Image (cartoon, rainbow over all chains, first blue to last red; front, side, top):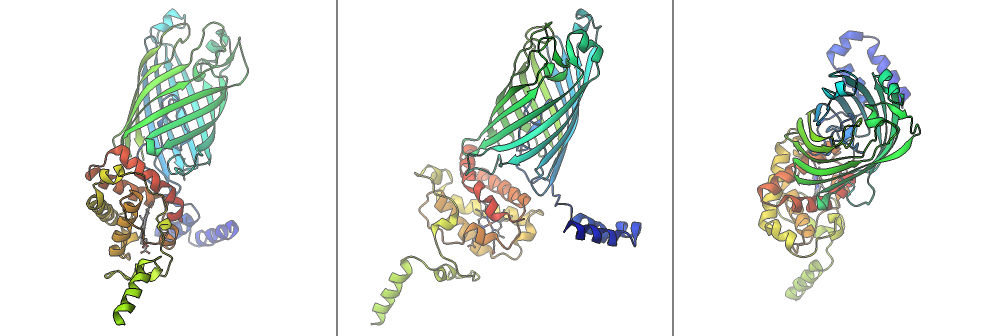
Length: 303
Length: 165
Ligand code: HEM
């Protein structure tokens, strides 16, 4: 089958090269063996929004859905910009993600953790910023979060996020073990449609400090451990999902205790192309500065 | 004698219905024979009358089916699927199906979902498009969003039977 297709592609491309590609029919033939790529097959918000690490999900939690609006016959993609304003810090994230045939999701994000004037108090210097890049892959294994209404089975996906932080020296100075780390997670998402209720649970094996913004592993602990991310959302209208999330995190660094994170969110889809998520987040203590609660805003543009 | 025969015939037709009855609706094109059964509707009905009332009963369901089909037939994503369709039959069977599921006291006389869709080659995105038009039609009819979702939860499991590509 693949052999035949390959041969026919070579047959059609080789003799005419550019001419055929421009002419169209050969291009059509090439696309014969690429799965259908219609866009917009999913319902509003069912691809989730861009989570802070770039994967499709809620705000703090990663979900099992593939990002964007491509169904099994399509592709979807989006870019996001996220801004979190905390009393003593600021977090910015920009990224891009694609969902391929509702099976695979690829994502990249760049996070900037800006210590602002707190940087001076920490001895890092005013405006000192940790920059972290996150590259993620997610694969749907079983289930359909939206359409699997006759079954108890949620949609289950597994994923990997590789994170690299640009402040290795500072990280080791505060007791962190590494400036790079890889998280592995299993996520299960289910929409209880008759209740308009979305539920997600994710287990993440990680040793990231503050999701990696303060490095990986530490003087207190340098082992991977499973952490939990839970989200509950209620669909108020086709465009509006409101809910809450909870995320447990490691506590690896001796110099500063790390707390679990919590948020209350509202995700509004203006259309399949633009959505805005606003949340109240409580990230607890970060690098000895307590009570980091504030506003989370995230704009997503895509298809 | 003739009258007796006629009565006998009527008794037969009101008993367990056979395919031929379903075909005999005037103004519709014939379809291949099939066994008529409520099970063909692909979902069990709701209990009570709340859902039926929320959809404004038969008239509301009629308007919802009409608007859903009109929007689907006008939507460039799905228009091509409906060009060769017997819309008279489709409107009737969809009304019956919705009425049956909403516990409006109808019988469903159409084909099973697998049978009705096995030759039209629907894709997942077609299903999404139809659901969107159904949502629009239900909203226009004033069906509360939560109630819409309860109904959609009955239709969602039919996706693997209708989507074949
Ligand atoms: C849960 C979703 C769906 C339900 C409940 C449903 C229901 C029905 C019913 C009751 C029939 C008539 C059966 C009969 O003639 O005996 C039918 C036929 C048909 N449906 Fe659907 N349908 C669904 C999804 C779709 C979708 C997504 C499309 C396309 C966008 C579609 C297009 C058609 C067409 C074109 C026919 C006529 C087939 C023919 O003439 O042979 N249906 N459907």
